[in-house]
Image 1 (cartoon, rainbow, N blue to C red):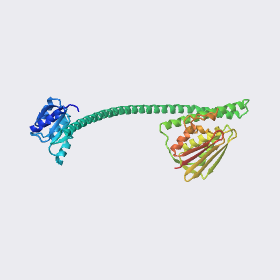
Image 2: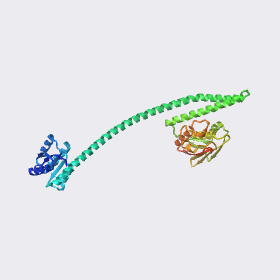
Image 3: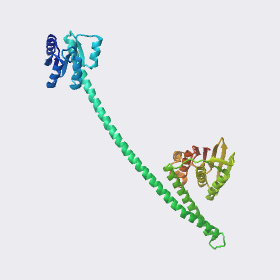
Image 4: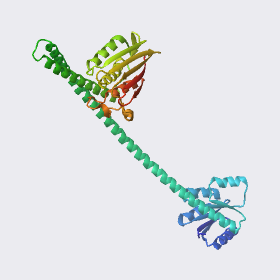
Amino acid sequence: MLALRILITEDDNVSALLLKKALEKNNHEIVGVAATGEEALNFLDDSEVDLVMMDINLGGDLDGIKTTEIINEKYDIPVVYLTASSDEDTLQKIAGTNPSAYVIKPFNIRELNMMIELAIFKDKKEKELQKLNNELEEKVKQRTADLNEANKELKKALEKEREIGELKSRIVQNVSHGFKTPLTSILSSAQLLQIYAEKDHPFRQKIAKHSKKIENSVRSLNNLLTSVLFFGKADANKIDYKPARFFTTPFFNELLDVVKANNDNEVTITTDFVNVPKSIKSDAELLYQVFENLLSNALKYSKKNGHVDFKVEMKENTLFIEIKDDGIGIPKKEQDQLFDRFFRAKNVGITEGSGLGLSIVKKCMDVMHGEIEVESDSGKGSTFNLKIPLG
């Protein structure tokens, strides 16, 4: 057992002397004996003490319990109570001051040593725990400060990203709109050339051939710009579902006319409209994007003189659409990337495309809360099944 520097606070001289001798037999150093709480506190101001033996009943203004409270607050030294009473009231008073231990008078040496060891062990563990708590609190403060700083930096980065995104969106839209005007002029000129080529002209066939190439190229570029503008809006979260009632016959006629205008593979399109009313309520612009992209892809990737089925059925205020082709198909292992931007399957070969069409379809379907499924395999054509709620 370690030798301790002990202060005895006991107002009975005989009890103090007996306690002093008992402690000295265990090699402890008695640095002083105080008869009152005031004396004990004064002694602690001037001396280094490892442990205080404290009688509960002391003369003077401060009893042992009050003196212990002051020692706990001011000196943080372990205290072992000495008491001749073991009644419940006394023990409750003792427990209220969180003593390191207490000894009932009369005591024996073995019990006394055991209580002192317990007091020192308890004090050591409490101080270790307090140190750990302090370190933990400091770490929590530091981590909290680091987290707050990281949040500030993240907010700055997100704000910067938002500003860059808005700037990019404005640039894309301005440039795209800037291209559309001259493209319209080029397209009109190409169509005029085709009209002129119909007259008696020595280069009639060449004029018609090249003007058709110009027209197709302009349409392709115009579609690309439309796709870029669409994603500019999508990235800026400006695509909303705006349902309105429109007539179905003009809508589908215009759709099919545009799609057939680019039918270079001479593919046959078979349509089947089941229970489709004269008018429906939906977002015509989003529907057009979905149908035009899927049908254009079906024609583009079909074999020459191939066949495409376009079926639309109305059931319980929901459109069920099937677009089926007998073209090159989509490899199974690549279908998980099918709706990613700029993705093009490896089997498309030299067929031109931006890889944006199906991404636009998926975005439009999400906005309309629709569902889309695809069944396909390389060389076996593709079937797209869509379910679009109306209203």
